[in-house]
Image (tube, rainbow, N blue to C red; front, side):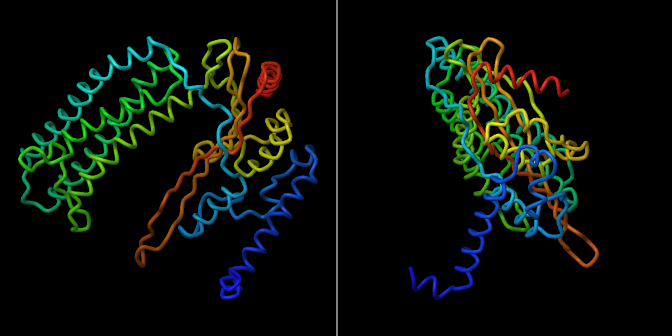
Length: 357
């Protein structure tokens, strides 16, 4: 390892310098009082590259800003952990509902594919612009099919899980994976005399992407659907003691530049002080670029959760040609803080957030 460091002294010095800066930042944050944290942006004080910006000169600058935001506000797991318990009613109903969801999803997907094929059959394909439009519509339909294969089971099994108090996400996740796999084989795999029901004879920049679509639709989507449903059900916060699902009782969206202030105060247990930080400006709310403090609870529940979600949205402009600029929009969202509260803590914080308007 010594030889590696000596062979790249610049990289080793840069890493050591970054570690030193991070340590200095931590010491500065620890030295500031709650009152000082409430007055000015900590990110601005530390000269973060993302402060006051959502427009960047290049994609590289945007990626660097996102990376710095993730270091300043590191992602953390949720304090809520599902117990994995379920009820007989929930299990039986999900098993009974699965074939219905399968038939419904097949009917909708096949209907859309047949409808587009019928529409395109009445068009004149001799014109290049018409062929290009055909390809765009076909690609759009493939995207819609993927969304349906993920969203429909999520809504159905997520609703059933909440109605019948299922906290075991593996059951709906497996059912979703099986349903999506069957649908994927039917519409994306070329089992119909070498053809597929979904439009897959497409090209991108004159490169055929048929097998890319087949692999994505036939293999990736079932895994993605199962993962999304698992995460959706696991994220439905539940109070085991009272049998109540928690809801977002209060939320306060702060300016993104005050996200570090909020994190520092929350980590100290200064919950009310964190909610008093400056709110996000209307333009930031419109762009959905903010740090949001959310209180999850229920009037009859004995437990609650306080979370800090951060959402970074930025745009970059890079010259595509001499007179044309290509704009890229990137959005990243992650959980930066999560803590379990007692009922008394939640009630006190809820009252404080309500009084703030």
